[in-house]
Amino acid sequence: MIIDKILNNNVAVVLVDGEEKIVMGKGICFKKKVNDDIDENMIDKVFALSSADASHKFQEIIKEVPIEHIIVSEKIIQYAKATLGKRLNEYIYISLVDHIYSSIVRFLEGITVTNVLLWDIRRFYKDEFAVGLAALDMIEKEFNVRLPDDEAGFIALHLVNAELDEKGMEDMLAITKVMQEITNIVRYIFNVEFDEDDVYYYRFTTHLKFFAQRLVNHTTYENSDDDDLYDVIKLKYKNSTKCVNRISDFIERKYNYVLSNEEKLYLTIHIERVIYHKR
Image 1 (cartoon, rainbow, N blue to C red):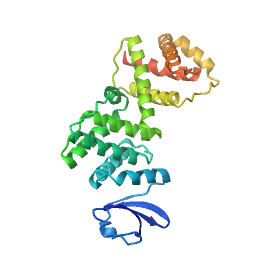
Image 2: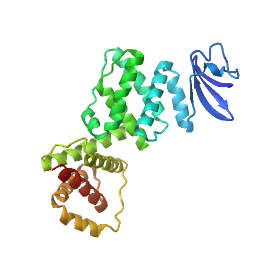
Image 3: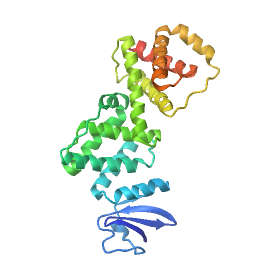
Image 4: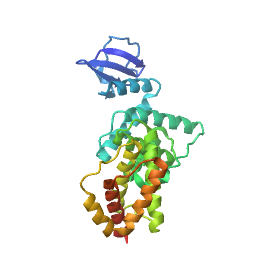
């Protein structure tokens, strides 16, 4: 492999059949210069990001990050892909490497950041949070540093963010906030605590996640031909319909977002299932 660009002593950009790849290994660029050959036996990791923007940003990040932090971050990403069974967009390499490196540095400096959404992340994104806890184990094994569970929550949000193909953590925080608000309304109206292991609760929160994503992105379902069905549902599930009307009023007041009848229909059905299945 011929060096196209040297990022630091351990990382280089190479061209393989015209495709740009980022290669990493301890000391692979020691006493090397552009157009020199790299011993492939010294390469530990190869990254090939299809997005030019993602590749550029990743190169900028890893210039400053020690190789050990990059390797453990990549292990976490591969573990997340295998465990969650979901596609993660390429920007996860940028956001997660930067976050893990920064969180370790902050912790060693005696600085901890409280995750105010931790409780809701545990509830809404249980699988991703479990990966976050496993990530803390990997970090502890590699660096002998045990980060607080707040960081597992932040890692989970980065994963969910990559699943939804969002551009930034700000949207993900807003989505989680909307989910929290709607769930609190349902809990208050029905005076109920949810069984977070229940499959109906999982379906309910999954529906909320994508509803909140539409709200944050200012997109909505177009009303379809389901108005007749919605009329039937309103008569059949009167308590859940009243709850959805309360949610609709709250969302319109706070976010200036008007729920379509189709959104009300599906939300009513999910609330009915999660409440009355429990009882």
